[in-house]
Amino acid sequence: MQQNGQVKPNEVPIGVSNRHVHLSEAAVERLFGKGYKLTEFKALSQPGQFACEETVTVIGPKGKLKNVRILGPARGESQVEISRSDGFVLGVKAPIRNSGDIDGTPGFTLQGPKGQLKVDKGLICAARHIHMHSDEAARFGLKDKDYVDVYVPGKRSMTFHETLIRVSPKFKLEMHIDFDEANAAYIKNGQAGFIVRSGAD
Image (cartoon, rainbow, N blue to C red; front, side, top):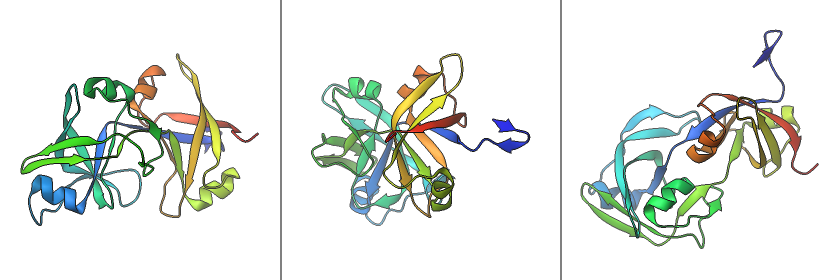
């Protein structure tokens, strides 16, 4: 959305996140072989982040999700981010958590071409959030760990309440929601949302 050729000051692009896996270096080697390095498939919107050529199968008590994309680079701990609908397939009730906040979360099993790995925690539904560069946060008058509401217009217009702000000089402005949230409001990748008020107001 533009106004007189200018982006509206409260506009935020939306990225729709499909299910994906973050792996530790040890997990990469366990699933793909000793010394294996992940192969970049395409760059993601956040600087330094990329989707990998490699995929794995996520196994739960009742079912499995095949060809789940790995996102790189490798992390300190492994983590799987799914939608609530994916949880029904797996037979697991994944809690809504911020990425990296995995203490007390359900475990999962991963199958790769060279082996299987059981992880005791790290299965989550990622809480919706907005990545902001420090300069963008200053422009919006926001800081890290603030919460805002985001209105998305359309035939199924929706306001997303309690949307976490994440600020870093490494980030680029983008709101992240999962497939269930996007489907509920008929949201397409790259569509615009608008910050309408601070959750603290």
